[in-house]
Amino acid sequence: AVDLYDGKIATTADEAGKIMQANDPARSSAIILGAAKHLGDQADFRTMGWCFGGGWSLQASLLLKEKSKACVMYYGMPEKDVEKLKTLKAEVLMIHPTQDKWITGEVVSAFEANMKTAGKKVTVVHYDADHAFANPSSPRYNEKDAKESRKVAKAFLKKF
Image (tube, rainbow, N blue to C red; front, side, top):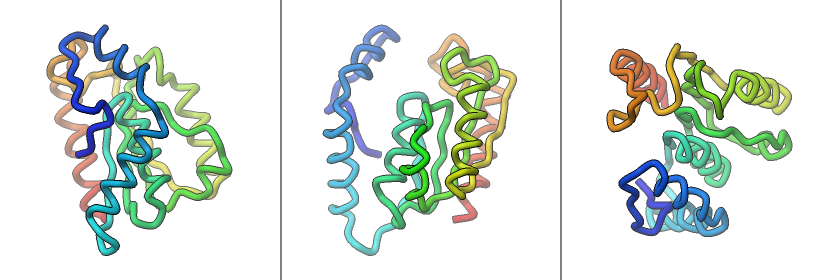
């Protein structure tokens, strides 16, 4: 796992939001590419993240090009640039809670349409839950859907 927060750890949602907003995308990209370089030319990758990390899971797969075999996004903000999506080599699984007020159904539908336009494969699995439903420390944690989504993600990743 890569650390896009340079060792900073939040103990509250407010702190987490501040750390997330302070993220430097250029630095995060450099961290991801540096980790890949460290692991060598023969390494390949499967990316996965939740919330902010869900969006970065997709960005990492874009950065890693053919080295990325699969991408799992748990309620993360998708890339909107179709030209950028055309460069994606990984297949994508998006875990979407239908009650999410940030990654809404409209955001997900637009991502599906953009992926189709880009000629890329995305599978979206919807859960009747809210953002952060898979995080046991969240008040919105939904154990049933969290366990089910882990099974779905594990089965998806096993294909690669």
